[in-house]
Image (cartoon, rainbow, N blue to C red; front, side):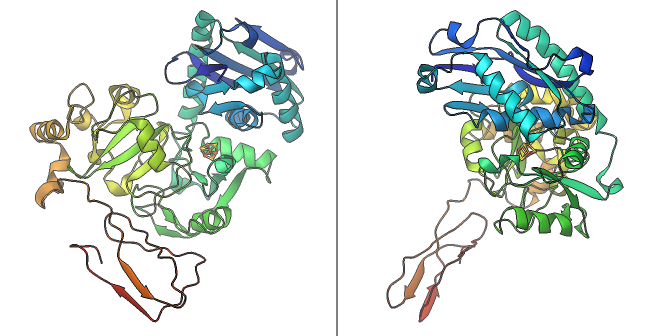
Length: 440
Ligand code: SF4
């Protein structure tokens, strides 16, 4: 890379869209506060704030979050330019090649963004963009941005999933994770933490054929796990048949898919039968010895991974948070930074019982801590607790065919699931042998 902005080592970063009165927006204006790209040393990391102000007769405040999320999408149209994450968590990189070819100023980035915004969202009549790289100024602007994010999130908190007859879907991240479909409900915020149910409603109204769309809930198939016939149908269509069922309030069996933009991961810890949480900015290994990045690799890509679940921080403030898995009573570890952010939403009797990286450093210490605090998870330990994550063992498939086919073994932990899609197989005989207890 030539330079990067934000990322895990830079705490002052944000992107924000504000809807303004037309008189406050000078169409096409670009402001750069601090060094421009060409003024930054090669290979450096810099703070960055992106403030986009828009106006238009049909542009309402409810659309701010949705317009803001398009920054991610549009930036990634640019060759040699990377944009990850959202809001206070952005990470951008510019390649050496693109810099050498002349991409050396935020003015060019602004030009791309303005053109794309106006052509793809014609309701935007005026747009001006400010880029801030001055470290002190970014800090100040970021504090204001955090207040805006909190106000947006708080607005959606009063509404319950049972009180609406539509959810919203988003496929913006399919460019990275082709089978991923976000289902946005009042009590299950989008994985990226940037789009609420209200944002979804506003976006689907102004751009019904766009990436954010209305979902008729249909029949409630399981209210505890959060399975709805309308959601299953839409997910199947939009994932081109890859995903057929989704449980909105569980990390197991058919969890909501995870693209790559999730703010945090809820992960299963088999040794204590509980769930841990880790957020994107957490440095170092979590309680299971794996860092966020390793678990993110196993979780992302639009897949349903049993026990690894991409979530937003706001979802942790919801009464539906992992409802089918035990909710907060199932949480046994989380970073102190996340705990602090959601503290008012953790049931008071559990606050002291959920350890962080400051309390425990190994699974053994975790077990001792949970026992000493009488964490409700110990009620699940009546049966012997699994001491180790079971090894993934591919089942032996012995097939006699003419001609001999390529064996297609596919195995997952917790039993065996064999998925053969689009495969034509002829076999005179298939022998499945027991290789160990529980795997057939
Ligand atoms: S994480 Fe979900 S809601 Fe957010 S942009 Fe991606 S698909 Fe849309």
